[in-house]
Length: 478
Image (cartoon, rainbow, N blue to C red; front, side):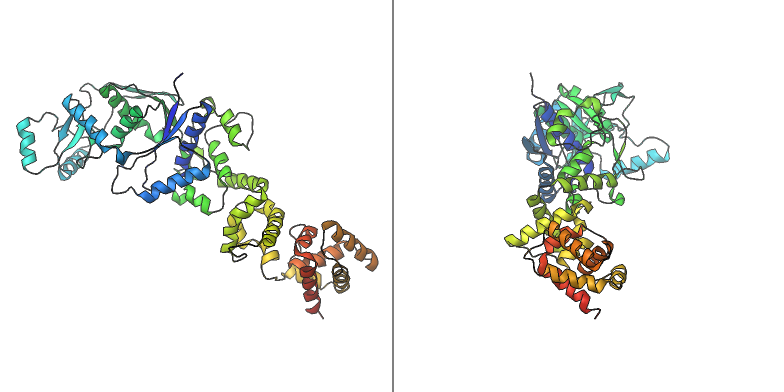
C-alpha cells in the first residue's frame, strides 16, 4: 500500500497565522492517522518579501504546537528544477516567452477595465516569430514564460474530498506566468512541480486556493503528471464574520504564545474549527485527536475563531498542567510583573508551585499573572481595599486579630487543618460567629474580603508572615 504523503507549504512573508496553523494541524493529523508523512515546504520564491526570520519562526511555532514534520524543503533551493520544466513546456509549445513590459501590461489592463472587459492577458506574444523574439532581446527586454491555456478552454472540475466536485466554467486570467524574468517560478507552477516530485498524495489547504487548484489541474495535464487528491478547508472568520485578520486581535501563533496560551489549548480549538468528533467531546489528547480525526467529519462551512472558547480551553489545560511545567512556563510572565527573580531557589520554586496551584482555576491565560490580584497576596505589597477596611473596623475585629496572632505565633507551620482548629478556638473563646473570625482574618492578611481559600493562603504564607500582617492591621488601628 502506497504511503500517504501530505504537505504544509507556508510562505515566509509573515508570522504563522492561525489559519495556516489549522491547515498544518489537519495535514499532520491526517498523516498520523494513516501512518503517512508530513512534508514541510517553505514557499520562499517571493524574494522581496520572504525572510529567513519568518521561516525560523514558522518552524518554531509548529514545534511549539507539537506538529512534527518528516521532510523539509525550501523552494529557493530548487530554482533549477522549475526553470528546467518551464523550458520543457516551451519546447513542447505548451508555454511561450512573453516580452511585454509592466507598463504595457498595465496600460492594456486599464483599457480593458475602462471598456468593461475582464483584464486578462491578451496573448499577443503567443505566436511571436524567432525574429521578433530576437529583436525584443536586442532591445534589452526581459521575458517571462507564460502557460498556454487551451484554445477551446474546457470546464475544469476539481474533485474535492471535502466539498465534492467544484466546477469552473472558465479561467479568467488568460495565459498565466509560470516563470518570472528573474528565474523564480509562479506559485502555481512551483506548487505543481513540488507536489509531483515530492509524491504528495493528498493536497489539503484553505478554500481560497480553489481557483489555484483549477489552474494547477491544467498544468498537471500539460506536464503529463498524475494529480494528487484535493481537499479544501473552510475559511476562519473573526467575530464579525469577516475574514480573520489583525483587526480581529491576535491572529498569529506567535501572538498567542506571547499572550500566555498553552499549545494544547490552541491545538484543541483549531482542531474543532471545521471538524467534529460527533460525540460532543471537547478536550482531546493528541492520541485521541489522531484516532478520531476523519475527513468524513470535516464541516464544510466557515468557522468563527472564538477567543472566549479558546480562553476556556486554556483555563482547562492550565488547571490540568503538571505543576513543575506550570512554574516553568509561568515564570517569564511573573518576571515581567516584577514578582520573582529570574533564578529561583528550590524553596522559592516550591512556594511558587503552591501559589500557582491555588490560583490557577482563575487563570484564562498566563498573561493574567502580570497583574493578578491574588498574586499580590504572595509577592506584592499589601494594600487594603475599602471593604477590608470596613471589616477591620468591626467592633469585634481587634480582639479576634489579637487572639489569632497569639495562637498562630506558636506554630512552626500552618496547615489548612491547623488554621481551621485555631479559627474554631477563637470563635468559641470570644463567642462570635465564624464570619467574624474569617472575614477580619482574610481582610488583614490579603487586603480583601474575597479571594482564594484563606486556609490555603495561610498555609503558603506561613505563621511569620501571617502574624506580621495581623500585627500591622492591629497597629494601624491602635
